[in-house]
Amino acid sequence: MRLYIYEHCPFCLRTRMIAGFKNLPIQYSIIMEGDSETPIHLVGKKVVVPILQKSDGQYMTESLDIVKYLDDLSPPYYAQGEVNTEIEAWIKKNSSLIFRLIVPRFTQSDFKEISTPEARQAFIERETASFGDLKQLYENSEPDIHAMNTSLTEIDSLIEHHEEMNITDFMIFPWLRSLSIVEGLIFPSHTKRYMNRIATAAKVNLLFDQAR
Image 1 (cartoon, rainbow, N blue to C red):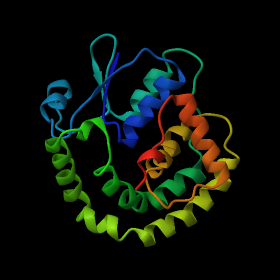
Image 2 (image 1 turned 60 degrees about the vertical axis):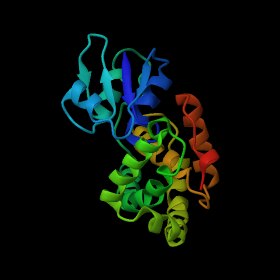
Image 3 (image 1 turned 30 degrees about the vertical axis):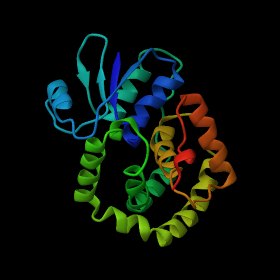
């Protein structure tokens, strides 16, 4: 099986998590930013990741569908149960704030999909169309960092009581991992331990080394 992904993408990370948890023999292909031909060839859509090529050669899209497909292949199972409603509500409340913080930093960082000047420029143009002036967002992010630090204290009490791995992890961890690229954020103790535990189990990296 093969997964077509972006390294920075929180939704792609969901599929990398289940592959890591289950030690699946997945091959990864990075789609470069600005490359519309590959996804169109695979699934008929211009910008869509992740894409799973299954063992039978067929393709799947939609991150949670891929997660559940891979999880159902064999035990042990990780993406089961119901999403913790309080954690889900936290994500919804903070989604705009999270994007304002992570997007301008993603465009400045080191990911394979933006490893050429052309790909990085394509990424900047795509994200600017969605979020506006990225330089201004980055330079004026102090109030958002302060607000996010307050919100991280709220999630910490929820994370403290979330012990059994289930579908909730595929909702919250990708956003916490994305936020680890933001210099100045303070991750409380339970949240930091949770992030390290899931990253280790999933065999994925956190982004503290690229924080800016």
